[in-house]
Length: 65
Length: 193
Image (tube, rainbow over all chains, first blue to last red; front, side, top):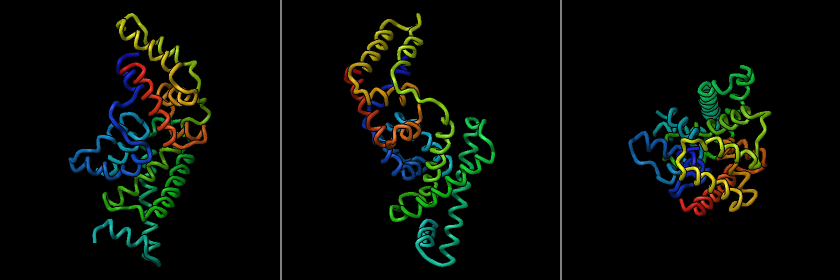
């Protein structure tokens, strides 16, 4: 186990939103990213800590491109 | 009228215009579900083609119901199609992850923890790193409640998808992530990381 794995296990240090808020705002934040606008840091932190939400974000980003 | 406003107006309307919009939306969602299945084909090599078709159809049907039920929640901050598409990604993703884990045991105890920590404890690890791993193992056993420990081990350590675990424990994704978040907070506090 290396330092990266430990960081992954312990999740994001930053303040993050939960899965429900992430889903509610997924479309809005994906389109912000596509327009080159900053994504909410609380969502970015959540995507770092939740692989399932990160998977859905990536899939929606691919669709919306 | 923007394209998104036209979608909402047609779906809120009645008669042939409404029926046509519902049919177009279902086709869009079905295409989305199939595309998502195609993207994940690698993880689903063992699943038959007709079963995948069923999964796509069920995901599109349920996403259509969700979109129509939540139409008033659409605030217009994104394109309507992006907003609608997230529902089918959710429905397809949940089904695919559950199918991929069907028949697989979800390990909820910490028995695997020792092996996992030891596997990385090679001579290449710095002493400080080895101490951190040992401290993390102790913290998992001592500062977490039994429920937090089960959730942390399953989600973070064993990488069980959160919706698969939610189904097995008869709870919700949101509730599980809240538990994981609190477990991580306690572990960081204990380790002063």
